[in-house]
Image (cartoon, rainbow, N blue to C red; front, side):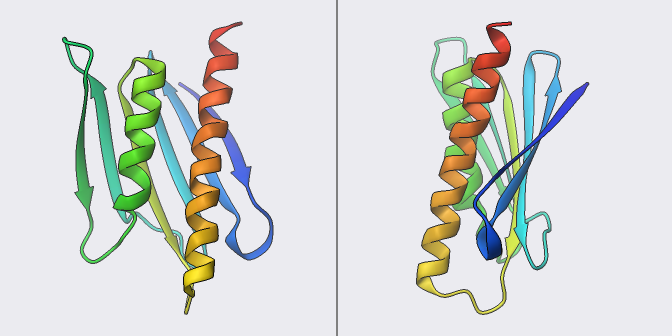
Length: 123
């Protein structure tokens, strides 16, 4: 199993992702903030008809589902494989502007993951 670390942003709202290549499948762990943790997990898979299905597990009152579900669907759709995305990020007293930055960084990080995987498959 191969692993890679990517990161997006600087300073307070920087996010990191660990990528684990598990055979043809992909596992991504996204984290950041003062108290990284497991807040939500999404598993997306390509069904026999080519559609993508996703299962979401949210932990308690954590809100990371808003990050992991679209990330898993985006990656599974583009890569044609099963993708697991886990995320946990926490900042004390984050405001709406901070949340927007985190969500933008998460989207950018997912695109970086996708580009990494696409470049890797060209090797």
